[in-house]
Amino acid sequence: MPTYDEKGREFDERPWGTYVVLEDEANDHKVKRITVEPGKRLSYQRHARRSEHWFVLSGVATVTLNGEVHRVSQFGSVNIPKETNHRVANDGDEALVLIEIQYGDYFGEDDIVRIEDDFGRS
Image (tube, rainbow, N blue to C red; front, top):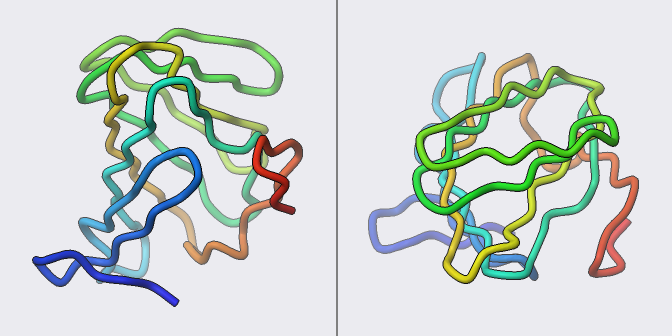
């Protein structure tokens, strides 16, 4: 069940940090601001029905795409086509903040296939 921030936007706390939904009214995209705490990372995952584009606002993202690791600095970005195994990690000492633009035909959390997860989620 979603919770909402003071501005009425969907907000969720996860074991790795938080996200807030900035745009979810269109049927062809969704926009989130994601904060990854130092030393944390999201699950290694893929999506069948959406692609993602990540834009780093602050910090340095360690991004894994199909097993290949990339470092993405502030104001850099990376594109993640659907069906691509991917993960973002924060190896730094400060919060990593990024904008995630999802595009495709479905944006539900049930389109996540977790391959590996530090927190035991399936």
